[in-house]
Length: 273
Image (cartoon, rainbow, N blue to C red; front, side):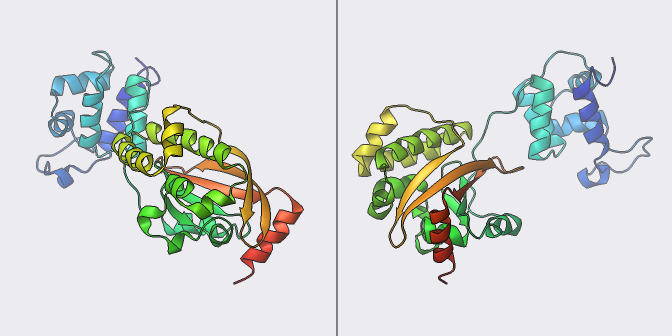
């Protein structure tokens, strides 16, 4: 069997040979090759040495998700490496398990700040806004003035009268927001977090409860928005959503002016500091 035919075995062997035995307490006897031995990986993964050997040799059939997760932990794989392991072993990525994020790296913040005339935010899979630029503060919402638990797009849309009044067609926007949120949160495996937020908003907003029961799912990643700003009047905006490489739990939402007049008004807002 060639390396191309046994891509899983080749990947496992490559990652095994990159590990330092002494870091795992396996130092001692002389070794002819670098890295951990097969039986040492099997020990760390709590699986049969024979079964692990067969996997590297391309024998024994497809492993289970549980076995792959054990091997991923045993080999200290990163999340992208774990995903690759599942694709090689099962032909699909692993099931999503939601991890709450409360902050971004300085690099990501600099990306936001590099767009001074484009309101931009970074949101979690449950649509908590965890980073924003100055243009977002001036055009959308002053997120920094809100308590952390209130920096959620759904909470703002359904419980903040100012946000609601700013939407030219609030019902259409709200329907899209609920459908897009449902798709994002379910994709991330955030079942518990969804239930908590949905229960809260259903108590606070009959409109949300009705829209949630419609079971609509929105998959569009871009669109058009008309926003009535409290001092600048009508703003016409295009928005686009972007995935963040290496951070499947986060997404970036960027708004750009859709008219010359809107560009002028945003420039006035941003330069008002």
